[in-house]
Image 1 (cartoon, helix red, strand yellow):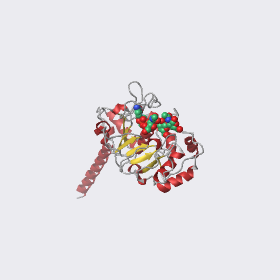
Image 2: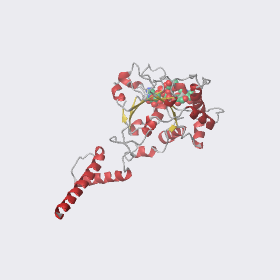
Image 3: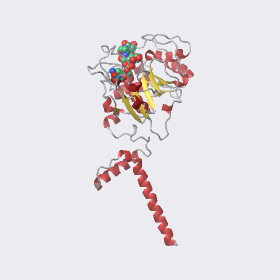
Image 4: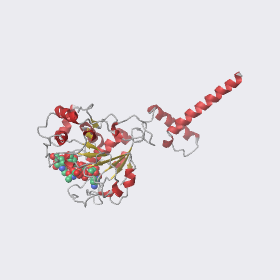
Length: 330
Ligand SMILES: CC(=O)N[C@H]1[C@H]([C@H](O)[C@H](O)CO)O[C@](OP(=O)(O)OC[C@H]2O[C@@H](n3ccc(N)nc3=O)[C@H](O)[C@@H]2O)(C(=O)O)C[C@@H]1O
Ligand SMILES: CC(=O)N[C@@H]1[C@@H](O[C@@H]2O[C@H](CO)[C@H](O)[C@H](O)[C@H]2O)[C@@H](O)[C@@H](CO)O[C@H]1O
């Protein structure tokens, strides 16, 4: 009887160890490609998995690779700072002094209104939180497509591929109607600033990128009195967006993108780069579409015939998106 019990304990222990080791290996299976049965190689891979397990006791997402799991590229790791907050919300309405001073210079705003009063007024109207992109903690794989406005999307047939993502992020004018087969029809989030505002479908979250205090004040007046109708160009007096759908891009995050990712090149980051780095912080997998100049290096849009090609000759020259460790879609 005692022997049977002992044997049962042994069998149970063996099964337990087997299950633990197997599930541990399966947890990381997509990152391990067994190319050889060389014991030395297997041991190296095993110790690499143990190292990862110690570094990430629980994987941050269920995708085959998660952006926030560092260790793939030193270049990337040196730039990515997971503590940076992409959103400004009613609970996180603080812009550190140095970021604020830097941000104030972006568009040389003369006599800006007090920032604390402005933020108080803004978050008295918009909550700035509760969006699916702000909810973390569930073990899932958040796949995001960031769609730039480049003319290289024409005839690309990327529409279906783009729409297969959980989140589709677009920016500025970016029309979809009439361009579905190349750019898709789904939009979950749309980046705008007052000068690039366009009407959005009801279910789309509007992420406002403020480049000056007036941009933050514009959000308030565009939802209430309609008093601001000009910044450096005419802007809409009123906007038709539900307050709950308005999210505010954090000015400190713009500084982070400029310093870490642009390495202080240029005046400030383009909307496209701000969107890509934003996505890297809120998504688990990011695929990028519609970035890049035409064959002559000219700026072009997929919906028009190179109207302002002469004015904007360079695209993201300060940074090579290919190096961002993203799947590159041209
Ligand atoms: C005349 C002008 O000011 N044009 C600017 C326009 C304009 O304000 C908006 O389209 C108005 O709706 O906005 C910009 O950019 P734009 O709206 O053209 O494009 C958005 C982002 O897509 C990427 N892009 C676009 C075209 C192209 N040939 N190659 C690209 O890589 C870029 O990453 C780009 O940022 C902007 O905000 O960045 C930058 C442009 O310089
Ligand atoms: C063409 C140009 O440089 N226009 C600038 C304008 O730049 C645009 O600002 C937008 C945000 O407001 C966005 O960043 C876009 O990508 C820029 O082209 C502003 O800097 C403006 C400030 O007064 O001055 C215009 O000449």
